[in-house]
Length: 326
Image (cartoon, rainbow, N blue to C red; front, side):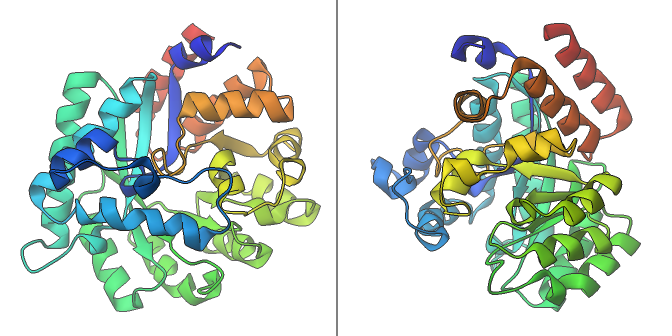
């Protein structure tokens, strides 16, 4: 498919971080100055996840007020609309915006106002995933998840665990997500981005509906079978994974392997601005490097709908729209 055809396709995105996906125009408006691309983005010459994460300081500074959060929600749906994303689950860490003037509840209310305005203006359907952070205490994370739970079905659809995976393995967070499950809160977990297949095993065992990245189960049939049998979605972010050196080369990237195994792979941007990417760009990249065909793209969009945390009515509506275009 050509870039133009890919752009026109209705698309689903499940793994997109708010702070890493804000447009330069929005950030310049908030900061009241010009912003250089190198302040915001990395290329394929990026050497590590640490270098990649340096690019989040500036956008995070724009998410410390209700005005910034509301504007960010509107901005990200505007960007998605430009390439016909029709449903997205947008994730962010509320605690990184909490301050003396903003509680978790106020942070969420502000973001949801902006997203709702974006939905009205652009027709992009959305949900929010609230990220617990690995470097925060269990008490802080649990308090945030309980507050987020009050918005479940009102714009929030689930929780996540993000941050330095290698430094803070999944084993440290089993109790947190056992409690999250008891609250009836769906969750996806960043797992297997940084080499540890055990993090994927633990994520599945604790009840994750999806895993973010999942690269570490490459060539591990036992864990792939476990993930497949559990019906766990695998949110793959090809360009980001190559930039952060989650894999060292194109040849090592397991998207073709996972598709061939019948895993519920979806394709995602991770961080649109930091990675200088779009869903259209990711699909082009997949076609060029891993023999991903039109039927694979259709399957990945269906997988995205199947593993989304949306209501059945929303899933049905998006599915019909995608089937019509394919």
